[in-house]
Length: 310
Image 1: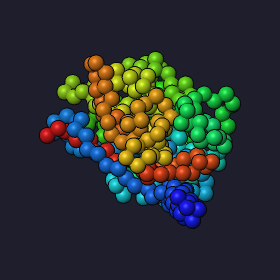
Image 2: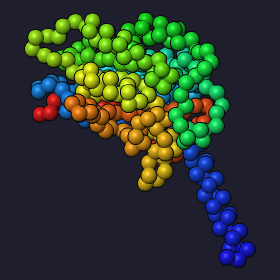
Image 3: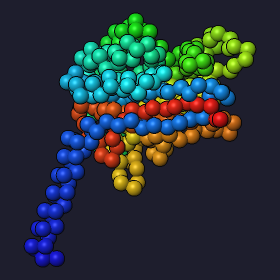
């Protein structure tokens, strides 16, 4: 290769790299989309139930476009909203978060939630390459987000706290048992506490068995196994950001947990020798303010229509 050819090739590579970087930081993180699936998990003859899953907003006070887009999702007419954690991306994001969720509350749509680590710990600058080596696991610092104040605001609005807890809910004539775990990523999950809450649920109707929905932020295999063993027909999770930066034709490079990378985004099945459940892992709507990058992985909400098999 001549010097001139080498320079042209290097220039081309540089232009392509700069274009990819501009796309990943300035364009794709703002291309919000809704991913839709239909799951045949309801009893025969049951009315369809539309579940909107919102995850990993990593909301900062200045992200007005994201707030308004989340607000607009009430137009999808969901019957239930499930929040799978990492809603906060800044210590001062609580008013913006409540504004984003206000239309669902105003419309009387039930909302259930679990937390992720970023709902306890504000973001800090980190080397993003560490995520490719091993999951970022335990925090050793004290929480610096007022999570109790968020919980109070949520519960005052009637939102259902599923952190190591459970609740019974009737939606469009179908009974649901919702149960969830606090974030396994920082070892806040408590399976015995969740199971004790499930045991305290009222007896089901004589002619109906509730459909069970499991909720967790980080889809570690241990947590998924616990939700599966407790009878979840569908498990909702987030945390992975879908890999956040995906390689074309190869997919996610990391799930930031022990979930297989081919399940780091979208709908799949989680199973053991005796049980199976649909697993929906949302790629989420945001990222750390210190790593606001997405590539081949648009920010998303999930709309899952639960229906009877026939």
